[in-house]
Every structure is written in structure tokens, then in C-alpha cells.
Length: 112
Length: 118
Image (cartoon, rainbow over all chains, first blue to last red; front, side, top):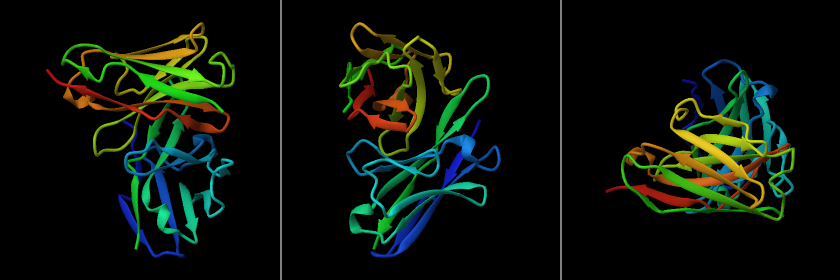
């Protein structure tokens, strides 16, 4: 059973910078994992932020960026705003004979 | 802009089959670059990818649910569907449908809560 691991919780001050990571139990996360990042606020559907590890959607604020860092997928928020307080999920692709996607457990980001 | 809307019973009895439909508007389900997926979220918990279906009927499922889940597409109605059999309380969740294209899982429905209870 493949496991995708994220930090359960992180706290950042307004205006600060924070990096969330996403690791795979199968080894280093590379571009082939097509990492997606999502933001979810209470009572709302997830909103896509990043695809293919580094690409932003047209609606993704400029302060969000995705990367591959030290064998993990990473989501960095620079100049954090109070409205960035949310749950963040990564999603990784596992190819092969029976392709599948696996979500990470999510990171609760608190802006304090 | 594509919109997705889940529909189906909000209450299902244990051991029965959960059936949901996602209606797509603003885009064709037969577009060859898209897959159509289902994701769920138990109350207070994280997201779980259930599987995806292509307009041709090709399906991919989560290993943990394979054997209980089927998905299909109805191109005439621009809809795709999820069936999950032998449900238990552990299948209680908000179920989302989503579109996956070259830009990942970019478009989501609002979600529908399905409760498994007698």
C-alpha cells in the first residue's frame, strides 16, 4: 500500500514564508509523479493550486509556488496572507500496469 | 468554463450499493484529453482518490477499492457514474467528481454527502 506523507500541521506568521512537503513511500518524488496541490477551506470543495509539480493554474495567486525539493514535492507560500489558512493536500500519480493516484494526508496550515 | 454536479441518494443502507452520477456542463465528456474522476472525503478526514474513467470506458481504480467499485460514462447525457457495492459505515463521506486534463485535477464538483446507515 503506497503512502504519501505530508506534515500534519504547520504554523506561519502573516507575511512569512512556509514550505509544505509531500513524500512518497516508494522513494524520491520526481516529475513523473505529476504532483498536484490543492487548498481546501472548511465546508468547501478542494481548489487546485499546482499541477505537474511546478505549474500554476490561471487562478493561483503568485505567492504560491511548487517545486521538487530533496526528493519530495513541495509547495511554498511566500508572503502568507490570513486567507491562506486552510488544509493543503498533495496528489501523486503512480503509473504502471494499473495506474492510480494517491493523496497525502493533508497539512493544516495555521496563520498566526 | 466546465461545471460538474454530483447527484444521487444521500442515504444508503449497509451492504447495499452506493450510486452517484456526475453531470458535466460547459464541456464535452467525450473530449479525448480528459479523464473523469471520483474522490471522497470522510467527515473530518482527508481526501481519497477512488478512480477515474475515460470517455471510451477505460477505468482506473484505487487498489484499496478495486473489486467494489465500477465507473461508467454516458456520452449521450454528458454524465459519468460511480457505483460502490457492499458499503459499510466506513464509506460514509462527501463524494466529489472531478475532471482531469493536462493541467491535472483542475475542476471539481461541489461534493455530495453520502451516509451509510440503516
